[in-house]
Image (cartoon, rainbow, N blue to C red; front, side):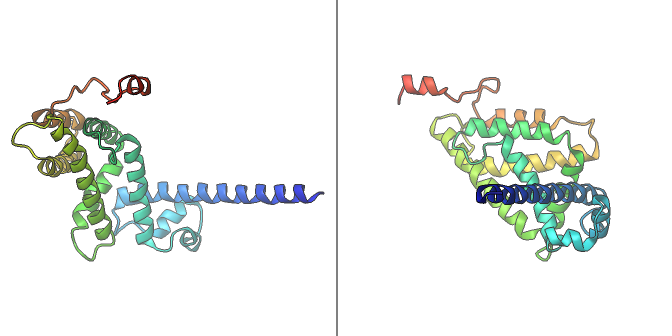
Length: 224
């Protein structure tokens, strides 16, 4: 076997090990989400999560140093999925609002995740809760980015009179969280995406059925 073959074999083993580790980590996150959603964070145990994955509690702790770290990883994964639908860092206010509606529609398909988030966000108002710092950061990040995107709508004259970007951002987050709680209590009462779009229509002038993002060709032909 040549040196090149030896190196290739070693790299292949490393890739295989990495893929196996990532698969195990994902399985733990999926199991943790099920356990935390069903039993709550405080009652859900690492032992139960480990059993669902088919490993020991010590093996689980090899991937996540403690229960708090596992919880934060579960919440971060939820946020990663949300960011795939909402261009939260964009300055395009219309795209952000459309994305939030898409997210509300998606959330209706994952009630367990919505319930976990709603429960934890309320519990985490206590400073000693393990998710307290996470939710403080998350609300600051979300509020600030929505405000920035809506500031662009304001400069374009598309934010209705009497509404400011800051007030709109605070209202949007309150509406989304409140809708989730009402929906969890009785899913026949409302459609979260529909109610959210109705709210946005009261303060933003946007054509909801049209993607206003210019195509690359249009931007090149019509520079501004």
